[in-house]
Image 1: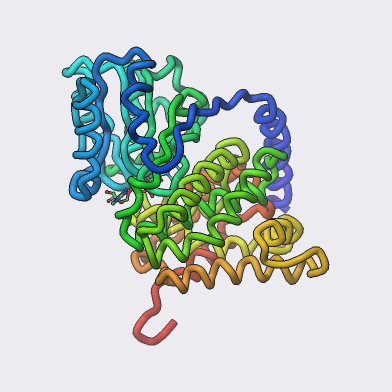
Image 2: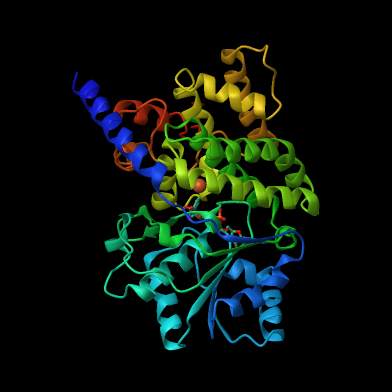
Amino acid sequence: MFWELQKASYRAIQVVMKGVLRILPVPVPEIFAGAGSLAKLPASIRAHGVGRVLVVTDKGLAAAGLVQRLSDSLEEAGIPFTLFDDVQPNPTLQNVEEGLRLYESNECDGIVAFGGGSPMDCAKLIGARATNPKRSVQDMRGLFKVRKKLPPLLAVPTTAGTGSETTAAAVISDPESHEKFAVVDLKLVPPVAVLDPELMLGLPPHITAATGMDALTHAVESYIGGYKTRFTDENGEKATRIIFEDLEAVYRDGSDLDRRNNMALASFYAGSAFTRAYVGYVHAIAHNMGGLYGVPHGLANAIILPHVLRFSRKEAEKKLADLARASGLGTETDSDEELSHRFIQRIEEMNRNMDIPTFIKEIQEEDIPLIAERALKEGNPEYPVPRLMNRQECEALVRQMLPPTDEGR
Ligand SMILES: NC(=O)c1ccc[n+]([C@@H]2O[C@H](COP(=O)([O-])OP(=O)(O)OC[C@H]3O[C@@H](n4cnc5c(N)ncnc54)[C@H](O)[C@@H]3O)[C@@H](O)[C@H]2O)c1
Ligand SMILES: [Fe+2]
């Protein structure tokens, strides 16, 4: 009975939120897309009146030789910059503060976010701290707590991906509490996004797979949720179709520039959809896997996605079937029920083909109550999911992803 009342209250809050979201003017970044589009970055930095930029990136990108490419292009164009390459995967509050110190001590007045979601999110929060120095990142946790506009932030994603280059979110980890949380504000949408597939050619297969499945999760969760609009539907359908067609091929052959380009666009489309229509329990649980165990975000999503879809299959049946038809998995004459199953099976098949396991090896049985508590604190009532989940249901779902034991679970 209590759960029934609670569900009704969550749904009431979501009705109000849906109305608010429809009138919210979410900014759209200026996009430079296609092979070689990184060359447009220096002129765009200049056009934004920036004197010295802080380049926010990570050591992996330096090792891949990509930071050198960016530095060369900035030097050639005579744009002064300071390099901050200490962002960790699942970036931390400390990463933000460290980047902020460099930003201030070098008198930067703009930021280039260069990398996957981790450097992009860290860069967003460095920018937010720079113009809102009295607010800590924790003060800005949640919705619309960034008071002042950020300095110009130009995002160059090198994974496909989080879509952070077009979203209003930045996700950050607190290493003390092992919590991962989001700051969400329209001011965090970067004014410029450079989608250059050449930067993604060397992305290792396992990161290609995980980040691609993150984009798919954005497309699917926003599509089956209650905040969808025609705009988010179109973007979700385009993204899903591309990911079904191209992700496995690009996992096998990372040098395929056309497919890398498609994936960069798919990630952007999926980001545009979910920043307006939100995500769901896959993300709520995945954030805990990142915060507690450091599991890469996309990998966690890929494993959790089929489980959450099965949990909500009946309620999401029509939408899953529509998405299946839009991505070529069936026709009008196939039943919704049949197509919704086929859609979930297709995701499991992709996971298998890309060597993504069916369990999360880090999960500890004794952590499950905490995982469920935190996941539902994040998801309820914020995410407009097709079927609401309670504590027992969430614990049972997470338990399905425990690693096999020697006795063979
Ligand atoms: N802001 C948002 O809207 C949003 C959405 C989804 C996820 N996220 C967050 O983004 C983070 C994950 O981002 P991610 O999945 O892009 O991974 P990531 O940024 O953590 O990068 C993963 C690894 O890939 C390497 N890498 C990146 N690009 C490369 C390239 N082109 N060549 C070779 N190596 C490369 C990096 O060095 C790093 O080691 C998580 O913290 C997640 O919570 C944010
Ligand atoms: Fe994500």
